[in-house]
Length: 626
Image 1 (cartoon, rainbow, N blue to C red):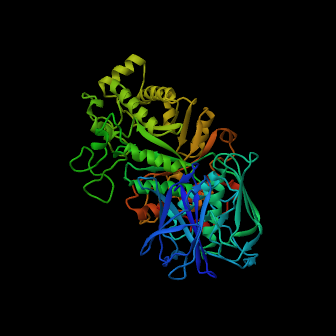
Image 2: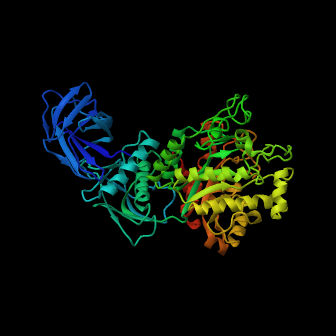
Image 3: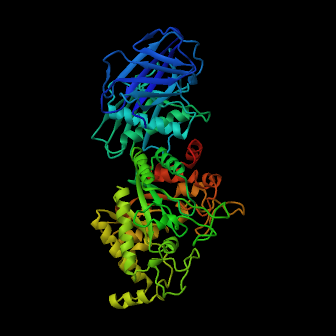
């Protein structure tokens, strides 16, 4: 999001363009000039009120404020230019880009440009027919009348705080990234006839809750602590997006939306090991999550096929373990390039994702998958391999001897070093350590593992994993973090219930079993929430089928909570899992992920009693894709 927003209004009767620059920072601004590019150009000589034209070349315009002008936090600089070469006929005839030149060194600060507004004079006609395009569906919605026109903007009234303006600008920027042709949902200064939005913090509303009241006098948004303001503004932006479509949706003229999420954890997992996603795709995926009001990004950064996070202590992890190929230890696996593929995220890029997500109400939970799913690690760091251990076990995915060996002292040293760097990058309280799919019989042929078993009285593979994961949990507790893991992490007393969060990927019964054992649990069952599952049995329907077939209605209908009282106490939320073995193109990704991701977003927010698949399916068509 930019720290400044430029709104422009076309006044046809005067053949004039009004400019309003809003300072969205907490600091005053002085000694600046603003430039913009516009096809509606200033003619010579300038006839401007409130600013001075400094220079112009073709579509480039540069204006300065009056001498001594200071733009305070949340303040606005207004000026109007009346001598123009042509009349504006479309919204794109206003500024397309803008910036500020600040200070003696001429540093440029970007400015977010809203669409050119046309001044309105007639009140909108009203209708009794309309539908609200909101996903997830709100807890309460009552509409007494609809606008029959296409509403494109909402203006912020003059008492809106700087923070409220910044959040509105954040949602506007989000909408522009997801829907480049969508008009700016929120303008800091609105043309005549555009409804005005008043915001107020309301301690009486619950965490992440909001309450929107629509009337002929404008819109009032009350919001609770957390992300209540953000979610209320996203709902308004969704309503605008729907009302501007040709799908039969409209914007409320009278009514109320009162809303609060059903679960605190509403997650989406993305496997970037089997297929590497460029940074821009990851950032867009976070944007898509935010538009769905999802708030936990489970970033699956490591697996057998590739290590995707830069670790300073072990550069070979990304130099060797971050690639597959005919000349690499991990041969080409799944993808559209027969020569293999590779890539990783630098620590700076990972921090960029964290910062981007934070302004959208999304926390990033990294997953460093141990002790299994580590073929790429062992290929890059051979000192973690017992040289006397023969090829003796195979993972379900077909990798031989792919698990970090608890009997090798360097294993725990490696894990501790990686977790320390991960904690420095990711501030979220939960660090996910995997703990799943250790092959039966793993390590039993390793002399070093056998020595550990005799020394500690460990009976089998599960006990070896439990021994290692217990130490890993102690390390994360020392680092001030909660240990996340798949359901198998609880085996043999490995990850203890205290200070843990487990992810149940089998059906509700397993989720309840973990809850009864005292674990806080996230529901992410393969049979309904794994988006790599095929949507039907057809031969050419892409996806996996080990958990069955899963059409969007099945996903939408599934109730993670059910009627088990222990889940009411311990189930913290739901999560979609996007495993990437089959997602070898963006077309496959979009086909398989949507609208099922949208259905899971609704499951995390909307009570079971308020779900309606026919309504959902119509609105889901408006949602963004990768």
